[in-house]
Image 1 (tube, rainbow, N blue to C red):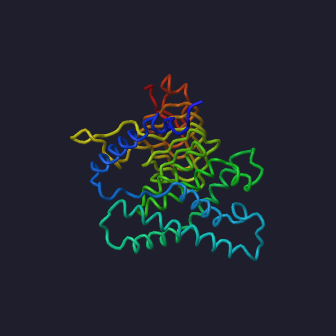
Image 2: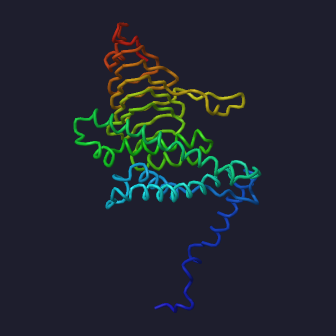
Image 3: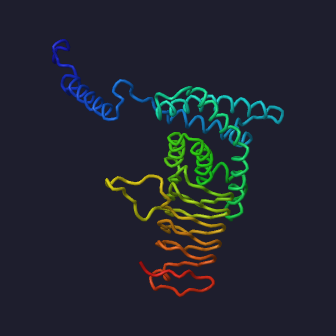
Length: 315
């Protein structure tokens, strides 16, 4: 048996000291590349944001996502307390992002307070939108037994709630926090909605896993989307230096009352006309008029134009 006093430490055997030094060198090189050598950025916290969204959800739906033993005479107090805790936490995270964006910005506390106040003022409108989404899911799914079941069980509603909150923050100028919030839902549900997308009321994602909705998508009212649908970009524009152009409109426009079935892939800045139905596994890169009915067979054969069939040729 070896003497514990003379046996090498595990760290010495694994050369941890050398690895720590090398990691430090890489980290400092990265910070120097971003001109932050003396002030490494403090990022918003994903864990804190998850707790904030939970608190906001409880304030929006206190009887279903709040405390299980709430009494009617205590609901307003609970909502006020939940909002106070969540918004104070959000204020701290917003301040971190503003500091990250511009370390020399003046009065970051005042700006963060104003943004958080503006966000809070939009929460009643967010609740109304979510009510329309929940109602659309209940009315659109024969398996749904109640709106309460939809709220607490459906991954699509979970993802949409995160998106609705994040979209407000994105519009107010804190895109990193907004993206982190939608990515929390993405991790939990498999539904990837960019907070910059614009989505109308009554949006229903059925089943949901694998749904992707890009940054510049515009989705109208009462649209229904099934699992594994992609609303993405067809190609990425580059500038003269070969770098990707950011923020250009590159995702589809889906008009009101469109249904997109499972596995459909819709790419590019095209328009899906009002009332259209896009069948399962369709690959679509051209606009289609209102009331189109696009199926895989039509995509293979090239269907003629009619009142109900989009003129789509095989790609």
